[in-house]
Length: 115
Length: 110
Image (tube, one colour):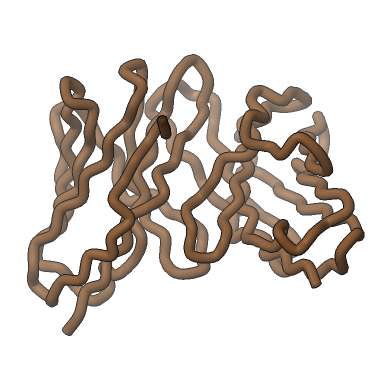
């Protein structure tokens, strides 16, 4: 019974390259959330998706960042033309569609380093 | 104004001490409340849900005050292993959107 799986765990990219972060939610979960955590800071909400739909992307930077959660396959967070400031831990969480009293389960995160 | 606010700490306490954290939320339509724990460089994990009637799990007690819009976490008889960052989480609105506080850091010292 696998939990939320994120890969890669560590990703190094040069400035200007693209980063693709993958998140497979808990089986049966239809809600996916992406968060960013800078060193020594708290979790910052980026985007909330349900299958094939972006519900809330109010935390996503306007440029270079995009997210999807296709009908089949993992959710992808894509960062184009990465810059040093994108270096952070990116956590994905998923939750089931069973009403209010539901918890979010987190993946172990992808640590992105831009050099 | 942030949806969820927490004192970042750190709270430095000796083993065996009792420590309490508060967290305030801004949206009166908030529906569900949780405390998560995050160890250094690891993913957050659910510590406990917070119910209107309050709930207790061993040394941990969570309370919700809807009138003043805050939740609290009380840790009794602190252990070294309690050292972590404690995140307050609120679900608001019609969608399952989780709002996280920035976390309160706890250091329990021998």
